Picture: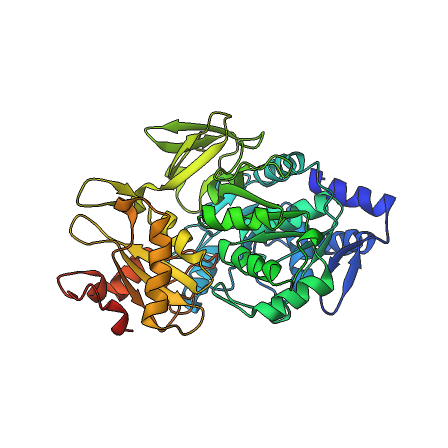
Length: 463
């Protein structure tokens, strides 16, 4: 029996009627959860099948199946809901063809599915529970009672730092449909519905993207939600604006920024809830050894088993993340951006586009932003607005953002887009990250100054 299920079983003994899982239709106590998992394990033990694709729409059934597959030593492959039919067929074929997995594989996770043949990260039970135990230690001074799932269950961050951690701590996991929460995919939110759900169900723990934190900040500002109901708001998935982080903390929202990657079974570093250091992602967790090599963040201690069907990648001793970073004077990690995304301008200055995008999106009027540029292309922002605005209003917002930036990093051109970046149009990953190459290809004509020369009246050319 693994350590996670031992803790779930212990909770069932000490508080059998305590609620473990809740959805719109069902509440499951810890004892009922243990019974349901054991029943499914018994069924799985009688099946010769080794690899299972997990994609049931019932969230409680999803969690039961996930736990049972781990306990039965089967391989679980959560299928992201944003995968296309082509990508799902690709997974089915890999399973049917019995493509090789590293020995000890318990879960295969997909970070975004950016191509028709996505790469699967293979993790052991130990990989996953090392992260859970390390997270439990980092948040030990906070008493979490009710965690609400916001991201899809197939997203490793929510799976491990959300569901597993909450169950490890004996908390209740709230599993509601996107419509109930006012969420649609990774790019749309109905704020009033979201606030109503938070007030009604009273979660004290959430895992948020910066966009959702921005919504919480606005809700707290206008009194639609009470910041005091929350005990832990973990933010990840994309760059968090320093401006937005300051606003959230000033409002009393208990925001802790973290950092991780699937190849390390999700979380590598996390701010302590009782000692937040804004602008950093905190100290590395106790299962992670982090070094900076030639500017790159390199991690070891809980590395993945390897990639599915890629034996040359198996059993790495360390992972070069491709992220640029540094430590502050107290040993907290600061992420400076993705090496491959860094923009080098005409004066040789290195600029992280995620930094600029985060600052733009900290403005309530801007829903999404993607920034491009190079030695010949001035910094150009493609922006999606939250509501219609005049050219003067948008120009004013861009001006305000620019005043907070050094001169070499200021936005010089912008284009207002009619359509948002979404999973369905291929411009957004399932976790809300920009697909930069796809966006650049789609809007190359307005990004490239050779094909689009109007610099001062870009707003008039709405796409």
